[in-house]
Length: 140
Picture (cartoon, helix red, strand yellow):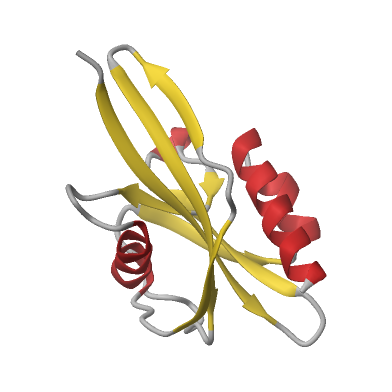
């Protein structure tokens, strides 16, 4: 029997005077930690937007937002008898304390413009998602 695991990946960003800045976090998994967006599991019966807000509140202590952007590019893959579905979103934060109040599961954070954030992301799906988000923000 296949078990489905739904996850959210949230690219937190702020809009500066000229360019957006993106928050990247690094997992506290030692050498295996890689740079990426906030991420977490969807609770049973939890709505996507509620999970996004929960992740941002729990991981950064942020509760105010301007907008949540659906990147319309879910990712899906199988690992044994588990099927993982990731929902990718952008989350515009009004203001973030520097440093943000990071959850213990992260060891580091950095704010970066697109030119620095894109090559820092280690997963191709994360690079594709931030490219889409950046394109949507520039088009608006």
